[in-house]
Length: 185
Image 1 (tube, rainbow, N blue to C red):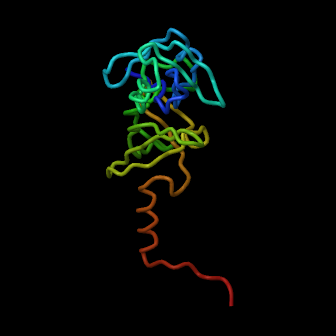
Image 2: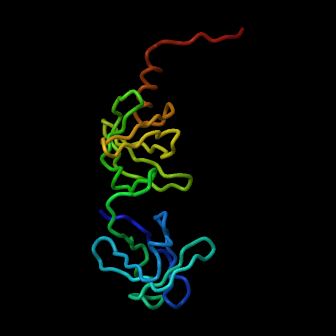
Image 3: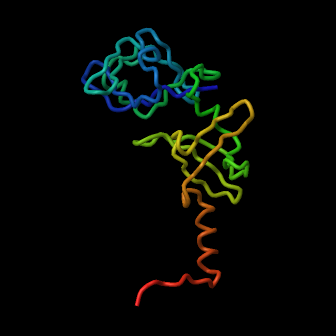
């Protein structure tokens, strides 16, 4: 399975350096000098010749792109490596999460994990609900208390209104003709 390491961004300088949008939690290893990264989908590979962190961003150079013009042509390219499973206890690759059944704590199935979005605040599971709509579920322990890849499920404990189907439930409750008493004069 392919693991996305980074996406090539804008050139940096004239010597073929380029800024990366890093998608790995181990850039020191994945972007080390000599590392070979494949261009997805199947467009050859690139070998890292220089790598450094500059103002919080990784800047690298590749043997196959020696000047600014060459790296400009690579802009937007996704860099990948082969990976099977994560060896960390609380870390999963997106391909390990795709296809997992999403369940509430009581065992009720609410959908299937179809992806993982990398958002500024935290990652979010993309859950496709039975009616085909998708919801973004923040991938934090308070909302996703259990990931059980071996049994093909993820337990989510979403706050009310997080899932798309919650909107239907709220609409039907509002339209049932029941009104609540109002306190006051």
